[in-house]
Amino acid sequence: MCGIVGMVGRPKVTSALLDGLRRLEYRGYDSAGVAVFQDGDFQIRRAQGKLNNLDKLLNDSPAEGQTGVGHTRWATHGAPSERNAHPHRIGDVVVVHNGIIENHLELKREALAQGAEFSSETDTEIVAHLVNREIQQGHGLLDSTRRALEKVRGAYAICVLSRKHPDELVVAKNASPLVIGVGEGENYVASDIPALLPYTRDIIFLEEGEMARITREKVELFTLSGETVNRRAKHIHQWSVNQAEKAGHKHFMIKEIHEQPRAVIDTLRGRLDPAGPRIYLDDVRMDQQTAERVRRAVIVACGTSYHAGLIGKFIIEELARLPVEVDVASEYRYRRPIVDRDMLFLAISQSGETADTHAALRESRKLGARVMSVCNVVDSSIARDSDDVLYTHAGPEISVASTKAFTTQIVALALVGLRLAELRDTISSDRYFHLTNQLLMLPGMMEDVLKHAGKVKDIAQKYMNARDFLYLGRGINYPVALEGALKLKEISYIHAEGYPAGEMKHGPIALIDDKMPVVVLATRNESYEKMLSNIQEVRSRGGKVIAIVTRGDQDVISMASDYFEIPAIDPLLEPLLTSLPMQLLAYHVADLKGTDVDQPRNLAKSVTVE
Ligand code: AGP
Image (cartoon, rainbow, N blue to C red; front, side):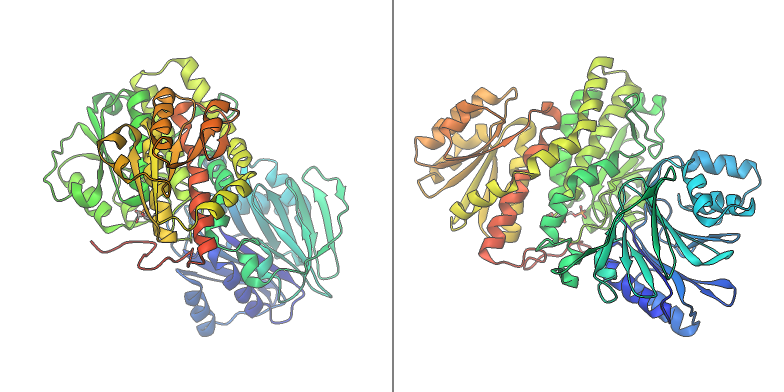
């Protein structure tokens, strides 16, 4: 997730570009850059880190013009460094991009063979090469961009400029957001509306597979195959800048909850080929010999990432028939764990900076383990210290309470499980195809669950004043119960406990009375009948059962005080759906109580102290 802004015809464009980028910084802040057209050529300034660094650079080395683009980067391919910062320039062409070019390696190999030179590790630079090649053959900017994009597979919102066409911006969109702002004598483009609100509220929403030529006088829309598109600008009345950053949501947490289908698509992108369906994990270099040699895996993480690890254990053990231990990083590192060369150490961390997880990883690596990590932040400390990294492409997670990072971690672990199973020959082709198909269907199923979010709000309204909550799950849904309880306590400050349902009668049952809401994960899987008994045990002590059920399961619905339905999915992937109502319940209870949802008291997003 990166932020793009472009303007044509704006006097003193640089400060407006910086202002736009500041409003888009929530989309990433690994580096930033601008390109402005001045005296017949582009002036490009790029700086690693937050926008302030670019601001300082521009103070020392000003660049000014009337047409330009800016970019704030959330790294996906290549470290967050100056040379990987956008804009990328090749020959006459300057490009900024948000998204992932899936076939960039293949295209880059072809370009290298033809003598092209690359100065970054990004997936974007190839687009600049492709467009420049067309420009040099005499095509216009719009045509050159179209011809280049015919070769490209993946997600993109791009903005392209050419020295030969100084008063034009060409933009194109496929699966990444892009809006066009219509002004008077000046026009604009951006990843999101807030960047444009100081200049215009007349917005054209570009749709998938569309492109536009933007000059100071007009905006022309086309499909990628060249047909003209007629669409008028919409006037945006109601949004404040702050609301717009949250895409109209009240908090980042609820925005990030709703981003999960998109985050899963991005995490699968380029790794799960729907044609097979088949998994390609270029980023995990483990070969067959190593996969067969591994005797056990140890997953280490903290908090929500630890809960994802507990789910990963079920997935990897079942698919790859590899014993998996899961430990909290702060415990693991202080108990002299047994580490050997035949074990796979797997660290999970959204930030890639959590001190305990990082220290555990370093120690295990020193002792000879092969180290893999699942991280969201590219080139973070944990990622850098790993033999293999599988990035979750969830985009920046701003809310302290982790949501989209959690579900994309589970997706990444499912990919690891399937890949290990393939290498170790422990999965039948039927099962492989079934699970890969289910992963492809997952974003649609998540959308389906999120469509009914209002129902969870009603449940939250009913129970928001409870003093305690109990969450019960079995098997792969036990970690979901732990995660549901963690979400609720961290943002609503209500005491909540997650428990394996079978353990309830060994103690926690004493807590149950008519004031205790009990969230029960009672989907149709192999522990279904046992969960029914647990529900009866809670009911007969007056407890209020809030059941998460498989759609249409009247048996559980008739026993529950309240219920929420999820679509049927393979039990191994069920946490990817059952965790959504957990997140929504915590969110709505906290919001109704009026707590600081995105920045709850005493917590920090990234825990870099031990
Ligand atoms: C969960 O909502 C918390 N933000 C917290 O438990 C978090 O998952 C934990 O601190 C680990 O962070 P990491 O994934 O960045 O390592």
